[in-house]
Image (tube, rainbow, N blue to C red; front, side, top):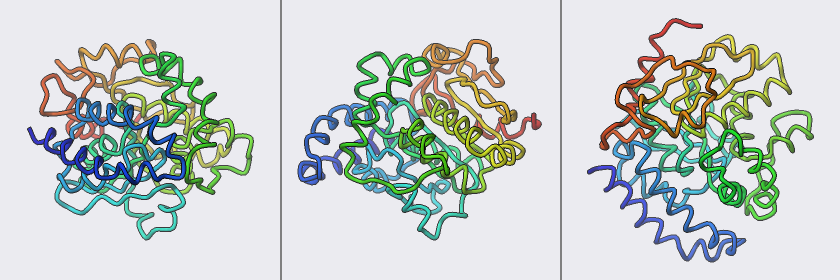
Length: 314
């Protein structure tokens, strides 16, 4: 299967960066996280449609497995190479800030592979480029997961924020951007991926936001923070932006009303991490939580996003 070949190309490339990881500014951090990152790359194969990535693209993405807060610019299939920006600062300084009007946030495997594959599925539905934010995998995620956060991310995500200080202390690169004029809010929303999403929503025209699994929680946190810090910007965004959630139905702040919630018919994991009072807008027959179209019981992201966009505005 093509998705396995894509994963193999990424893993081979990743092995070639071992020396770089050991010589990183904080090698103890990198060594401690390497096995979970490798596992999450395998989860990306299981949950995301890696077949839509070329082997050389996955090889280029492999060193960014755990680049929490990295921004990817992903074009539709066979259009252009994936552009990788280490953080929002790098993206803001680039010549690509106006190319994409859509944002995608993946969640299960928390690596650049899954983020890129998910974004390409969305880009193919739109026939237009899409920005993706890598959820990443740091010490805070590892500690929160040890306490059950992997399976109960709706209830346990606060644990991740408690441990975020460890990532701040050990992360080799520190972005200088702040998403608001209120530093206390920056500290409360400490997760780097959430802060990156907030910065993108606050400073760029985004007409569509698509999330999968825990990525929907990242989106929700970013929108709540934006609503608290800049109600005018949040209202303007809510007036034109459609949100499509796949595999987890998460509460969004009040200004945002054009929301399409998509759930696989047999997605027990997604329903376990969803608000029970939010109804499905689209139920995918026979589907579970994964979006890998080479595996049975998948959610076809390109198809459901196209279907969601055909629905009347809320």
